Image (cartoon, rainbow, N blue to C red; front, side, top):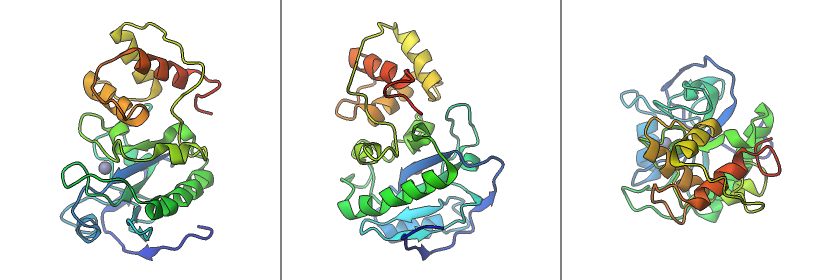
Length: 233
Ligand SMILES: [Zn+2]
């Protein structure tokens, strides 16, 4: 089933039955000081958290929950009308200390394991690029992971995630309320408007995450919403 991918089984009891078909992949960072600590927590019945896979910094892939089951990784979340994101997604934890413990770039060996894992899962379920998202995209008011150092471009160039638009950028001139409506149309939960703007920037303009709606944000969001040439397929 997983062509060429090797796994270490590290079963977690933290799952239940899916209520929806799989249409998403959610990427996380572990946000803990070590991979061992993260694995312990993701397998602790008392913690009630898990993911389907954990990708260590050296590229080792641990399999925690069978894909047919609902792993508990996204928490209270929302994306493109789906509220039970856990039911609709495969969750992948990427080992990184995160913003609280010394956030650092994701090593090449780790990306080298993550990319074929995402490619294989995406192809097997026919998941669209726009539904390969970060935890911060589906829970903008609560989460920052995998964060602005995550190399979305490496996924996008292989058509595994949406690229940052670079062509035909035009400012639609939306007032801020219009931008928020467009952001909701794109998929974000905009209950906390500024958090949604920050999440959008973290994903599509990581060099300036200030929560301010500016011309570049409007240009990027318009290009992402247009069906061609850079919208979702
Ligand atoms: Zn997360």
